[in-house]
Structure formats: structure tokens, C-alpha cells
Image 1 (cartoon, one colour):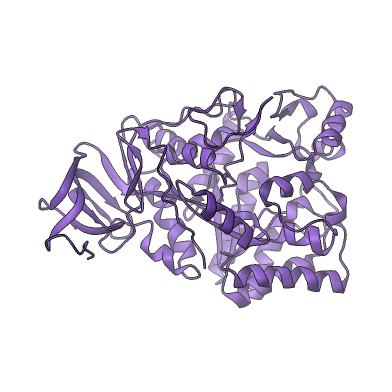
Image 2: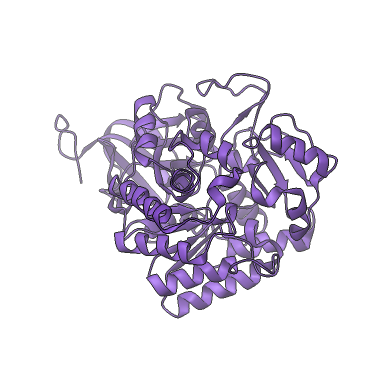
Length: 497
């Protein structure tokens, strides 16, 4: 238990009084006071605690803040949307950054509302080592170059050595693993994926994979995307995290989840992740959005919504024009129909699968016809994103807990907080202090009303913040207080391996 030096023993900086406290690790589910001192949880007690300040949270839930393992939302505006969705730690592990130190340095210099961290980006490292493209520039440059053919080419031995060396440097700088978006360069040799997995395993860090196409979708794929992840886990011993399973597996999700079960049963370490939406979002220049590739996913050009204008391309010719003019422009892609019970069931089964964690795949904001201002709040109407950026975790609480009863409140909170912390903690020791409501843990806490918490973002109104959160604390500092964002609060700290 920690105390500020100037306080009498047993007196806390402040206390959250009388809430329903949920701690997924210990199973605590009961009314208690939570004391916070110097950014840490200093006590959890069923007896009243003394404090300099008391916040009455009776009738509300006090839970660990949500840990988003899959957030491409790197700036203050995106963090604010996620804070209002209960997130206290936003990590970009699927795409990552390279050089990773550039991302950490920028976030520290500008300040962030939420804790932040990055994996090493195989994609950005490969853009330089194989494609000869500039190294770095953050996620905006990565998205702009995502459809560039140069980095997707087969690399020779010298280029692959250079790729691995860039990734080693990022791991040495504290990257949380290696993000491998192999689905965006789906013709690379499987041996390269294994070599990157072996590097991660040797460093004791996970891989975070956007899988390449499944054999059912692309018969001539160099290797089935799910089998590739399974093979790497089995042969290298790496902890292989399978990102957003339904959005890459689509109507073959059940087969993929069974395969991952088999890998785990045989001693391999694989984890899975899902978000509660049928549509994805990515750069319109992505290889799998080429008109000739759409049929493999049973979609057509008009199932794509170009975010900067809201246009649905009428035909392949128009899609090609958009891809050529703005390859990094973001687009929503309606892969699965959420109004179709059969399609929705694929998403539900993956999300509800034992062991799956919740990851939002939160996206950067697109400022339509205007200059980006990440400090603006409330967000103006010309800002768009995918609704998952603003509503993933609250949609889980609304739909799967309150409406369907498919998850208990404790299970939903665990999949959003403690489960991600547990997946990361072996390689990222600071995560042992997150995802829990226990003395000695970080005071990354959320206080919400379980009867009203809900997402509000839709595909048409994508930046509407979620509701129901009374307080969101990051390191004990209020980012949301009495349901209102604290605009001057930038308490987020770096999470490094």
C-alpha cells in the first residue's frame, strides 16, 4: 500500500465510496471503497476509508479501465473518444510503428489522455528494407504507403536481414512485440513470417497478426492464413495473437476458431481477439480491396465507403480512381451484414469464444474538407471514423451483457481489462499492475452505470461518444469526471516491454 508522504497513515488522496467493485483476477464483486494515493490504488475495503476527498459512486460499478490491444487511434482526439468508451490504455499492437521510438517520443512530447504503447511494425520496417521507402513517419505515412507494390515484393536475403535488424532495434527500444499485417502483403514467403516469429520468440515478445487470406477464399495463397499462425506458434514457441478474427475469417470464422483451440490443446500459445461489428476499415489502397479481389470476400465496390467524402464507388472503374488518387484514404468495408442473423452470428461466436479478448481496431480520425485539429472538442461534424473507435467496449456491455445476457458483467469487464493485461504481462511487466482493482495496482479505473452504459456511434454518426461513464481515471488523474471530459488532462504514460 502506498501513501503520499504528507498524509497521515491510513488517509488516502481520495476515495471512490460505496461502488460495486469488480476485480476480475480475484473475483471480487461487492460494495467497497477504493482508495487512491499517488496514482496507485492504495486500498480496497468493505469498511469506510479516510481520505482528503471522497467521491460518492454508490449505485455505480468500479472496474479496471479497459486495455485496448488493438488501437490505431494515436492522437489526443482519438484518445478522448476511447476514454468515453472506458479505455484507459490504448496499444497499437497489430500495425505498430517503426522506428518505434519515434512514436513513443511524439506521444510523450504532445501528451496523451490514455496510456499508450506500440509493437514493432513489420510493415513499416519492410517498406524500408524491401521497398526502399522512407522509414517512419507514423501511422499516416504507413497508411499512405500500404498499397505501394514495392514493399509487397519478395525480398532477397540481404533485404530480409535488413528487415530483421530494424525489428531487433525496435524490440531493443521497448516495442511490445511485432505487429505483422501479412494480409496486406499476402504473397510473401511463409518462411519470412516464420523468421519474424522466431525473432519475436527469441526476444520473449508476442506477434500480433492480421492474417493473410484463407485457403477457402484464395486457393493459390502461399499458405492458409490461419494455418500460418498455428504453425508459427507450434514451431517457434512464439505467443501468436490472432487479431480481429471475424474481419479476416468472415464466414469461415468457426473453422479458424476450432483450429486455434487445437493449437492450444497441443501446447501452443495462441490468443484471439474480436470486435462487435461486421464492417472493417482500412486504407482504400489495400491489396485486398483491388476490384479483382472483391469477389473472394463476396463484396462489391458499393460495399466500400470512402471516408473522406462518404462516397460508395458505383463500379470497379470508380474504385480504381479512388485507389489511385488517395491510396491511404480510409474506407469502411461492409464484409458481414450485421442485419443478417447468420452473418451476425459469426461475429458473436468469435467474440463470445472462451479466451477471446475485446480489441476495438480503433482508427485514426478522418477530417472531411478540413484541417485536422486533434485538440478540438467536441469533434466537429466533418470528422468521421469507424463506430468501433467510439463504441466497441460499450457495445459489448450493452449488447452482450444487458440485451443478450450472453456474458456476465464480470466476464465482459475481464475480456476488456484483465485478460489483455494477462496476455501481455509476461513480456511487459507493468501490465501486472493493470486490469485489476487491487492495492498496489495502477489507478486506471472506470466508474459506470451498468444500466445505461451504451455505445452511440453508428456508421452514419461515427464519432458520437459512448455514454454511461461517470469517471475515468488514468494513473489516478480524472480524464472523465462526472461524465464530462477533462480537456486539460493528459496523464497517459508509455507502456514499454
